[in-house]
Image 1 (cartoon, rainbow over the protein chains, first blue to last red):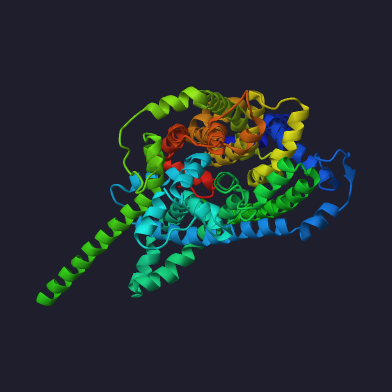
Image 2: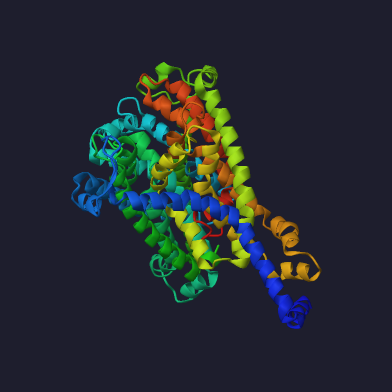
Amino acid sequence: MKQTKIAKEKVELPAQVRNVYWDKKKQLAFGMIAPAFLILLFLAIGPMFFMFVNAFRTWKLAVPAPPRFSGFKNFLNLFQDIRFGNAFTNTVILMVSGIVIQSLLGLGIALLLRKPFKLRPVVMALILIPVLIAPVVTGLNWKLILNDIFGPLNFVLGGLGLGEPLWISSNRFWGLLSILIVDTWQWTPFVALVLLAGLEGIPHQVYEAADVDGAKPIMVFFRVTLPLLRPMFVLIVLLRTIFIFKMFDPVMILTQGGPGTATETLSLLTYNTGLKYLDIGYAMAMGVLQIIFMIILANIFLKFTTSSKISTQG
Amino acid sequence: MRQDQLRAGEKAGTKVIFSIVRWILIVLVLLVFLFPVYWIISGSFKALGEFYQRPPSIVPKHLMLDNFKNALSVRGTKGLIDSAIISVTVTIITMIISVPASYSIARYSPGGQHISFFILSILFLPPVIGVIPLFFIFKNLKLLDTYFVFFLSYMFFNLPFCIWIMKGFFEDIPVELEQAAMVDGHSRFKVFFKIAIPLARAGIAVASLFAFIFAWNELMFASIFGRNNVQTLPLALQDYIGSTGVAWGELSALATIAAIPGILLAVFMQRYIVRGLTFGAVKG
């Protein structure tokens, strides 16, 4: 009834009126978005412009010389910079190990919580606490837990006879591992709940069909469940890549990139270069590379979420 | 007959074992993810000596509130008040700006895909990339260390996030509902206020809670844009860590206070967190 009414109205509108009608709609649409757009323009395009200009200039605030155009010099330096390579490697290590470990643990937890039980919503709410606690609190907390002498973790490890590492302050391996542990603690529950939503989106009929075919539970898991979870895994890989790439607070609080520059990540190196050593041009060149990487990722994310079916699941 | 019964009994037996193992694992998971939360809360009741002992003190010796008192008397109060002012104001501003923007994108998509993409890609930017240029821009505008710079700069991630999240909720409203109202003589603007907003209220609530928690938890912008006039809780906490001879008890007390909003939100909006943090890709 309503449908036909609308259709009728549309047909009956003379061209002139329709124009006014559409213009009003457009005005409203742009009017509603304008404030947000202008603010974001100032906050994102302003800095972006600043970045692209200065990435091609030599501008060190620590030196009295005025900024001057230097072409691709910053970028060429970046590719030879051992410290940049180190930060890049650290970021990749954290990304890859974080994604693998968190996906596996998350999958385990999701399978544990798959069958509904009375307290399940409570468990789900409680394990999400790490995600929303202020990162500064998380970092500080883990500094206490990972303390090599008085921390509870080393006490347990020592008691089990597994040795007591120095964690944060010892070397690159333990430093990165500390950061990884904190990130894993914070994000695994989130990964688990994403996978749980994926598991619940798998229709019963698929399992009934597998059952009729007499498939063994392990076969069903590898041949049915895992392939059907694929979109969720892609989503997790995308999101975790983005978040670990952006990660700053835990590194800043736990290790400050140390010992030396052993655990420095790209975000932290950019921060240090720009705001500590005041080498603006160089920091902005790093920024440009990171922006390019992120724009590619944003593109993939958008294509992926609009094309795959995950948005209708759950 | 007997064989069947035996087999059934065996099956029930394995079922019980499975369920016991499952519960042990669930408790283990809870222990792993909640112990650190317990550790910070229990730390706020400990005397300083208890932080330096082996075996570590699992249960605080006394339930003393001195740590809270001290933490709030030194610089905690300033941090708490500033965090509250900034988070509340930022939430209000974010919602006023992002609700119409989000509706406009969901319904009319002005500027096509480009605007959506622009908004999403800001969300993906490492904040450190924005913060260095903004530091110089704000410095030249003499805005550093003011509340205004916090209100403005926190829009950097809050606006795109809230627009993106609420967009999904607005898109869930059937267009026919709004068209019917328009046929009944309501203007588009009225339809937005009287129909779209009430129907998307869950999304608006979720977005505003996220806006609040992001502002409440934020550290990097705060550490660069704030100093003496404006000092949020994360900034106050970081200063504590940096100083020598850390007063761990006070620090834990302040950290516990800082953690409360996150804990409450996790518990009460559990089913929306996954949707929010996957940028709406998973509707839990």
